[in-house]
Amino acid sequence: MILGLISDTHGLLRGEALEALRGSDAIIHAGDVGRMEIVEKLGRIAPVTAVRGNVDVASEFDVLPESQMVEFQGVWVHVLHDVHAFRRTDPRIQIVVSGHSHKPLQETREGILFINPGSAGPRRFKLPISVCKLDLGQRPWRAQFITLAGK
Image 1: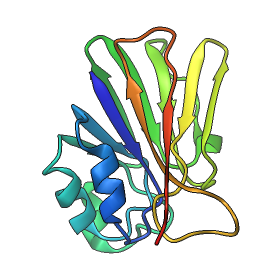
Image 2 (image 1 turned 135 degrees about the vertical axis):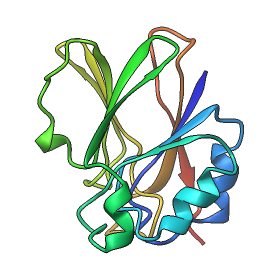
Image 3 (image 1 turned 60 degrees about the vertical axis):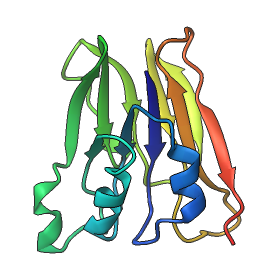
């Protein structure tokens, strides 16, 4: 199972981000969506799990939770926007996907894999524009970060 990971679109869904996520069996959007149409467009590729970020304050985002626990083929993933708000409340959590910092990240802490796909929306400072794919069938898990040209 391939998870496509995206965050911090801030209302901008690049065609190259859509192309990079093709082939995903499921997509996770870790917040700061910016426009609900983005979730709908991602949903044309694969089922989407999305959470609300700090910019998602309009009433249209009320349908998105602040965090979600989802299971993909026996792997439990906790999704939230800001990793600083993460509290391990469920011992099943194996992977945490977050956004907010706009910085791509993969690290393991206390047996949990933390992944931030980076920002796929407007460029911020000199940070890369990126999305990520994660093959849950390959162990150890390694995120494949995909840097987008950002044109």
